[in-house]
Length: 140
Image (cartoon, rainbow, N blue to C red; front, side):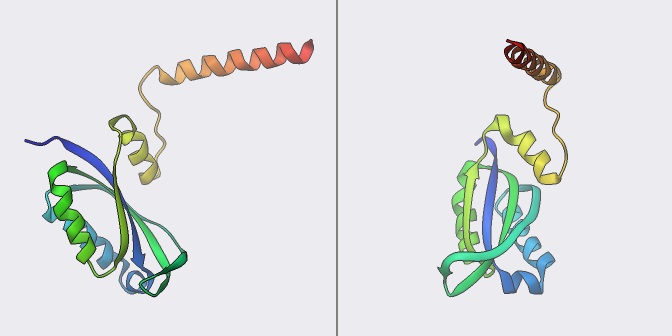
């Protein structure tokens, strides 16, 4: 059995298609992931803007992010499904480093990630010592 990884996919969607039915487009993309054995963790629209250059006669695009878990071998089928989806102009999928999954997902949800217990204390100590060094330098 293949290992389950967490992936991030950034889509450039047809802005007109997305504006007509944002919920339907998001649901379609999430269903494609589920049909190919994935589980959506977080999905959200990122921004809409003019493209740097026309892509298939599209002048602007809606950037949409989806974070999902899936076994690696299923990605080939999923990429094909994304390419055939009507609202998708372009897509890029990357595998997330396991150490970064929780902070990235928390950020995508709009939450604050505090990290493992004890990690904050060590950061505070290094900040304090840096502050003292700056204060000592200023006095000299």
